Length: 294
Image 1: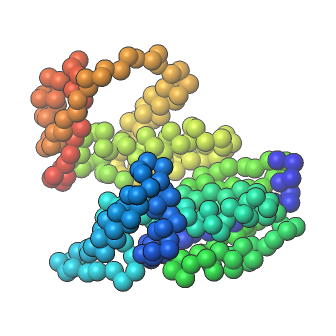
Image 2 (image 1 turned 135 degrees about the vertical axis):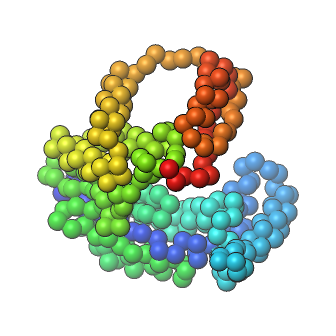
C-alpha cells in the first residue's frame, strides 16, 4: 500500500464478449489443445478440435418462435458457450496481458465475467494507452472503460476510493439496479422470498465497510423490503440470525454421505404437512414454483 499514491484504477467492461468467440483453427490449436493437453493424450487433440468445431457450428437459438444462427459467435444458452468464452479470454490474457503485468505496467489485473479491474502505475502508462492497446487485441471485443473519478472507481457491486494510506470500500449500486425482489405476498416458499435479503444482509456484514456505510446499506435493505411488502420485523429478525451465525459459528456437524435431494412443487403452505415428514432423515428438500400469484 506504500505506493498507492502512484497507482490509478480503471474498470473495463467487455461489451461484446460473445461476439469475440470466433472459431479459428490457430486459436484452437493454441488454446484448446494446450488446455486439454493436461488430461488427455496428445493424439486426441485433432479429435477434440473436430468435435468442438461440430458443436460450435451448431450455434442455433430460438427467440419469439423464430430460429436464428449467429454469424460469428457460439450459441446463446448452449452449455458449452461459457466454457468456450472463458478459454478464449484466458488465451488472450495469457498472450497479450501477462507481459504487461510482468513488466510492472499493471500492478493488478482481474476479470470477472465481462468486468475487468486494472490498477496501473501512472508514471509508466495512461488509461488511454491501456484502452488503445486492449482494443487492438481482437476486432470483436469492445471495451467500455470507466476511469477513476474523484479518486474512486467501481467494480461489480463495490466502489473503491483511494486514500493517502489505504483503500476505502463501499457498496455500489448501478443506476439500473432494481429494488424489486420476490414479493412477500406471492405464492413462493419463504426460502425463495428471503434469498435476496440473506445475500444483501450477509454482504453488509462481511464487507469491510465503515459503520456509517453499513447503516446506510441497512436502510436501503429496509426500503427494498418495504417496497416488496415484507414486514420490517421479519427482515430485522433475519438480520439478527445472520449476525449471530457470523459472530458465533455453530459447531461443525458430521456430514452424511448418503444424503439425497428431492424437489417438491410449492402450491401453498400446506405442502409443509408433507415435507415435514422428511425431517430427521437423510433427504434434503428443494422447492419449485408453478403458480406464483397468491
